[in-house]
Length: 96
Figure 1 (spheres, rainbow, N blue to C red):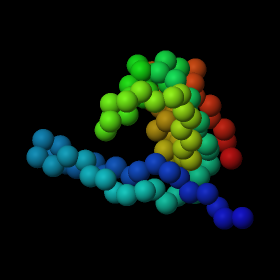
Figure 2 (figure 1 turned 120 degrees about the vertical axis):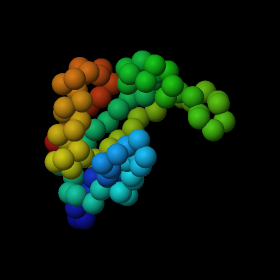
Figure 3 (figure 1 turned 135 degrees about the vertical axis):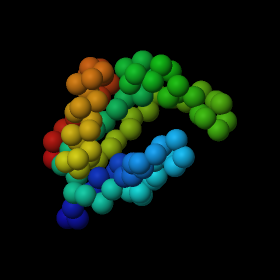
Figure 4 (figure 1 turned 90 degrees about the vertical axis):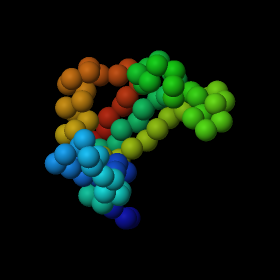
């Protein structure tokens, strides 16, 4: 069985965001330690209904589930965000 890796992207902060914004460092390659499932139904996920609109076509989408694998660093970032905003009803975090 192949080890699962994190599905988040690496963001590289810069010293002066006014002139050079953060850069996309590509997909994270660290070993996943948790699975985060978010139910996008327009309310539970906290997106205010935007998750049910196709940004390109502007069409309404059916409710859907998003699954992300998190490494230790991204799990820490997620837990810090939850501590600031509070837990979302539509999120389920499972440690691997």
